[in-house]
Length: 448
Image (cartoon, rainbow, N blue to C red; front, top):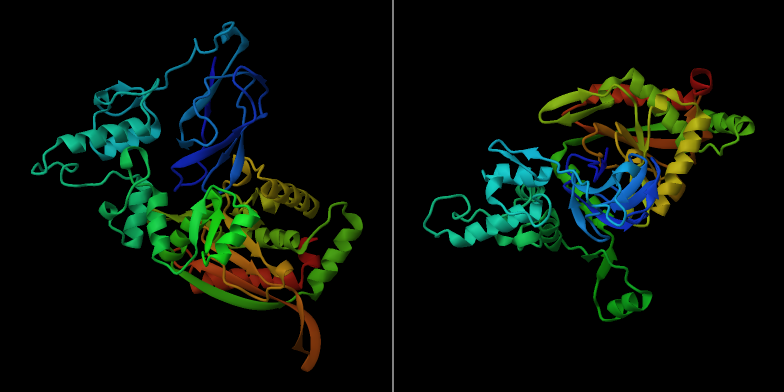
């Protein structure tokens, strides 16, 4: 039986993913778990793996295409289904039911049709099933055909826009009718709204998706221009942090801790563990244990409800060339330090090489952002929605502090906990941070 290759959704706010490149060609034999393609999402560039053994067929999206999440971009045929010279004869026809009748349509097309109270039977598909572009084109044609005196939502001037663009415009107080859309049929996309928002700020202009040669950058600087070519990942990161900063009620708790025992702990670990254990690895272990003791911090806010997560998945903020990426160490509370270090090294290498898989960046319940290696003393981190908190870690630096009533030089570190006040109050946040600080200052007897 043929198996669909579906563009995955890696976040609640993600609408599309961009095909970076196909690692396999149509008609090629593939094995389950083998990389098929690289896609750029709102979080990172990740690999899609083959969901089954067979022959890759019906590749419907090319490199550079933006594809709605949930859409079938290829199928994998079993050897019995492959016809010589023609691998398209057994293509299944996925069906989405819209309420009126069964029509072959992508999930995103169905959602847009429902939003506009549109019967998909009226829409003509350009391909084997109705896609978002087909629906938007139909709506645009209807909008042009209706008189300006009619009272339908389309004729009344309701602009075509993606749900994500509508949410972002509402949050930023932007009028969709004043924004020029770059989507199919002139539909306003989230990127269009973000561009308007960024233009209103005293920031550098953004030109996404293009690498600028050094000579061109120099010429731009010489001419007084201040433009910078950024990846789509960076642009989406800007959008997500803007949304997080403007929609999440942040508050911060700061604690300075003595790191002398942490240093000793790491030195002892390095003597008997093959992997290079870093301070970040130690903090992952400590934070994971603290989250088990304080489950309210291992939670999320969604649709007016608090959801407590059953498993502890710790994300690590990693700086990559195309932007900030947060790979996840799953079930961190169940791993020993060697396993944590091994996973962290593998994830960081993948992130910097743009080879992360969807499962590598999904499911995070808490995030650690460590800038100590950049000699930062302390900072406030923006919460990675929909998580409830993020821990910002500064460098270990020698400071004069009181020890038994006398001044002494000690290695100190500043921890800053950013909390979502909808999920965590000050007392709960303080108790969690106190547990983390206690484990940093006395780790050997508790965790080793």
